[in-house]
Figure 1 (spheres, helix red, strand yellow):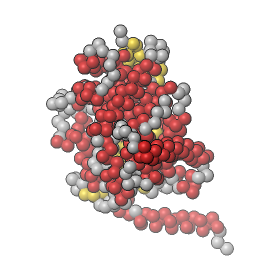
Figure 2 (cartoon, helix red, strand yellow; figure 1 turned 180 degrees about the vertical axis):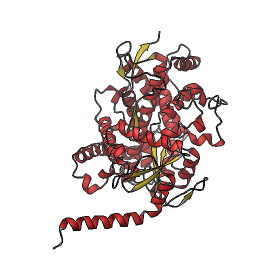
Figure 3 (cartoon, helix red, strand yellow; figure 1 turned 30 degrees about the horizontal axis):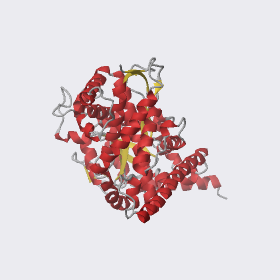
Figure 4 (cartoon, helix red, strand yellow; figure 1 turned 135 degrees about the horizontal axis):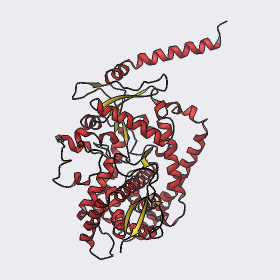
Length: 505
């Protein structure tokens, strides 16, 4: 009688051989591109991503550095899924304009977002994009600045309680500011997150991101049938249900309000993005999916970008002084709030935010699925069925495009008619080397929204306070000792954005 263990081993070997035959073109591609890190059976390079969020981000950094050293590409296996890691913008531009499918790494977010446009298949994303994009018109964005301005004044007032005191984390202040701003502009409601000691919605989202980031990087957790038996699955589902229920209640409330306004012929007023979507051709489920994308992506990206910028300003007083001088030139001694007309005048502040997002992009990596063979300018053919991992963290530090001072914080790179750096020989493709909000047809439609929100909040804070580094920083603040970061879908500061404040006289 044949041993059952022998049968299991035999079936497993047959499956492995079949899988290798099925992936033979991709395996050959991985050998052509190569990698210094060995891929293990079944898990590939997944062992390098085990651990906490900082360990995951360090693994992405390793592959990014390796790609930069080898003409912008290296190989990465996560289980039997293969990714070409890319740190060269010329290659990335070809991929991001030709391949619009997001692939499995992003599909794990469908557990929360369904077919939200940020992860939807192309056949769903394309018509959704046409519906959502007009809502980000400049007219609507300028109306939203009124909300940003009012919420930023609340932010600045709240910071008075921690000014002239000990080191504190500015993260909770920016994240609740972003939550209030996004909920009012997107959903049309005031949640007063800045007045709460604890915001359950934000906490649920942060925990959901942490668990999902761990799952994304560990292929042995990908199988849904297996993951359902893991203890973290119940926690993940609870967070998802809370987030969805929260948004569903608001959509229902706004839908009923809209019906009442139609019956009473209500006056014209500035409408939230949700109210605009309710008048579109989208179904109730589609509206929920797009609202989740707008709320979660909008609040988190802006909060991460503003928090990193605040920390960098605290470490570079000469940069902060230039920001304050620009603000003084616009506002003088007045205490008036920021208006939409002020934002275009804050060119240096915008350069500071852009340089901060170059060094610390909220979305450190993005993925694409190749639905066809792609022939690169080098002659290498990336194979259909494989994936591409655009390593934005590494691309933003690629010395070929940013100069030998690529690791330095130099906001002047983004001022008009200013070279990238003194010794830089940036090629014509320089614009594609900067993509904190993605690039190509599937770039983030909320780029201007996020920039206006961050500029308004940082202007309010710097006008009233001097930002100082943490009293006892856990590590030296300046390069070659950059901020420690972790990967929790968004890239975040390990030390939670610690600094001090001093009121300006």
